[in-house]
Image (cartoon, rainbow, N blue to C red; front, side, top):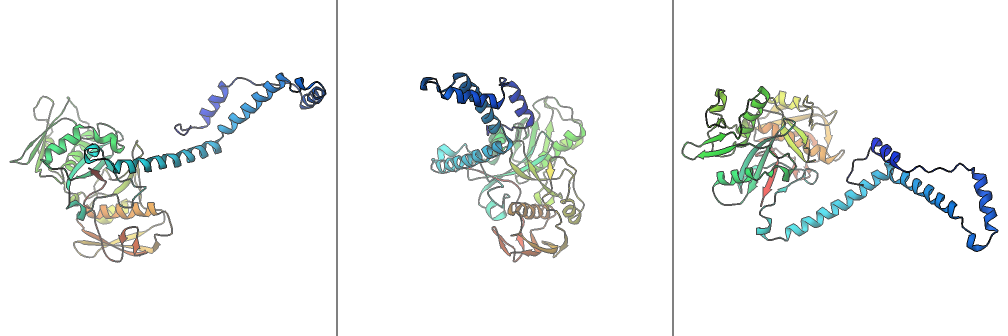
Length: 380
């Protein structure tokens, strides 16, 4: 039952499919009938007709109980506990596998387990970072930063990951990444994308394609990206003949929460750019994009004051105690603010009027380093 999302319509339909159970006798008549039969021989102590009717009534009652919202909710809760235990055992088993057995696995740091879901500079220095921009069916841009210690040419590794349709492994729809044939010229540091089929781009589709490309190669050795039609010829739109990747520190957007169709949580930039950091931080409080959710809790207000060119100061108008609220919510707020500040070139953020100073891996006694990029994924 835990695998189904039961609602009132489902329950009603099931009940209508049940065989009709009816007994037109009055309870007093049934009682008298039972009492009279008790006086008969022991072999006839139980009335088979009554037993079958009673069994049917009891079965119907049990079905009502099993389909009741409270029982279903409890069933879901119990199955969630079992699933959590199964996932824990699976994680332990996977840790014991050899490197060869694990090399095709993608490990995602899920937001409900860790406060920090982004990739930070210190960790980025230790690994090869491959950046991807994916667009979902809801036209939401999801930036990813895959880190790996695999050796070899970055472009070959990048392309192999893309062609293996890795999206479903991390809770995103298949086909969300760039589609088509990719070629890389190392001398000019140019990527050429030949589309897999003939396409007529609407304004929205073109906008998303441009954003995907600018995000996808922002941390690679790429100066420009050229998009060709499926016939190998240049497209009429001049913007597709020389797209420059955008560095994370120049994104100039506000970050929001997005839950994918695969029930995975990501921090993603808004579809529109902001003119300055003040507008972006204010814009984080609400969004008109249907599938995005603000990471700023209600009644939390603040202002931003640049301390210097590298550090932004965010001052809360009232003391904000991070221990008095949902830690997951506050964690998403902090990381969303850090990513937003990073998009305007700030290397750190100083939070004022926030306590405690040491909270879930954050040292808030001084400035907090902004991330390298959002949504870290580990490729063993």
